[in-house]
Length: 378
Figure 1 (tube, rainbow, N blue to C red):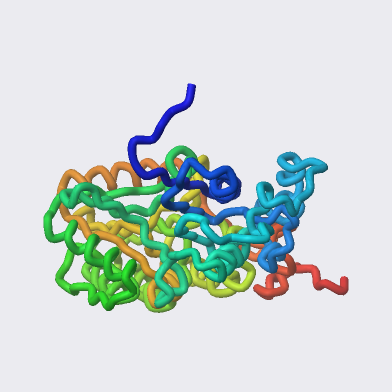
Figure 2: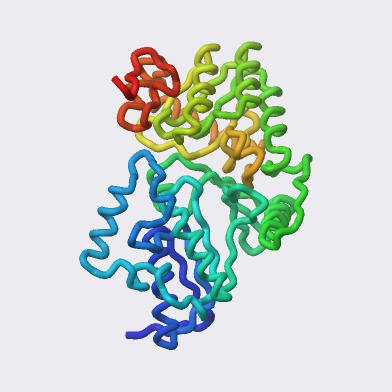
């Protein structure tokens, strides 16, 4: 049975699915149909030869050997430069549908997407990506029928719906919905967008750092924080000040080995500074922390995509929302308390850090000047 589309057809795929989506567009062009109106490729793998420069990026749990093994399972002995296996190696990219290509900064597949965008543009194919005004578009939001908007920490990936701690806040306030839409339209059309300081929404670049600091400064009893990264000196200093004036500050973070090597010093430094002043720093036991929540005095919270890192605050497109609705704050309080009860302390001693970093970040102990680290020449 053959299904016939009643309207324009678009193909969407991420990672290996991006490979399939690109190949389907080539195949449809060669066979004269069905017509495809658009292709969206999300951190796509488009070159089975694995020749992109970004293949040298080292990630916890994924490296070039892992990717090569996966490609071997898919390709076997087939020609890896076959355009239906590696769309980037097609001799002609003319006549392909317009593309929206999303890449991730720290990803082995990053340059596959960038190279393919260049191939398509050279062939006269319209290509869109994130706004070049930002190092990365990290915002996670969705507007439905101009009546409601989701502001989220989660990505559109199965693991973020089943394996990670993530959050989404639904707002139906007209002003919020219009502002999310305005931000998207400005970024899409590469126009200027000036975030409002008196809004429920918290934008970066813009007033994001100031809004976060103000909420911490207003704390009188307790600050609860879940965030992947604690690398921004200004926010760390505000958390330290809160602890020193008697506010109970509880922090949940990811283990140091999940940091990029070039961010290890500031990332571990931020955690240890907080630990040194008595702030409890813990990690989740059974879930991977991806959510970003700041809850103050059980009365107000900021939830969204913003990591506490200078890059997120100053050069990436990020979005969060400040909420004071009792039912939302109470639910966040319950979840955070549950997570705290199902967590364990992060061992930030020299010995604990060496054990965490061993065989995960090359020469991590040396970078951090940890007692007992092994020099490369030992």
